[in-house]
Image (cartoon, rainbow, N blue to C red; front, side, top):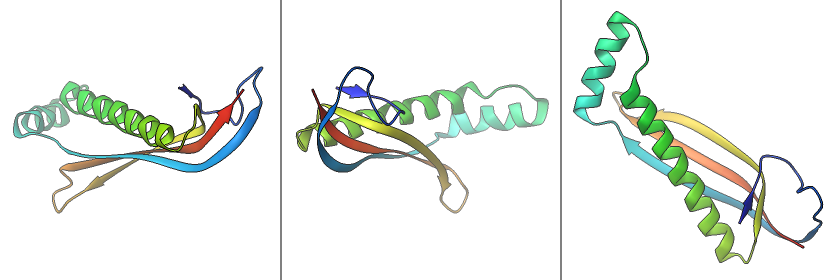
Length: 106
């Protein structure tokens, strides 16, 4: 499966458009990572716990997007975009959405 943030794939032409596809993941940050992030917030520095959670959520959203495109018969997804939101009363949930256009390329 070809996935790209561009609107085309160099050297290939689009044969069919299958529609917009999404991959969505909502994940919670566990208690230990939250404590570590609190210390980083106070003392400064990067929060590796939050960063790893964000990376994992983004990868899962991309894999779900590819699965959904495959179900539509696509072999590529163009114009991929990622969106990030925090959810929940205490902002402890992270939502990552990947979206793009499912297509068949030659």
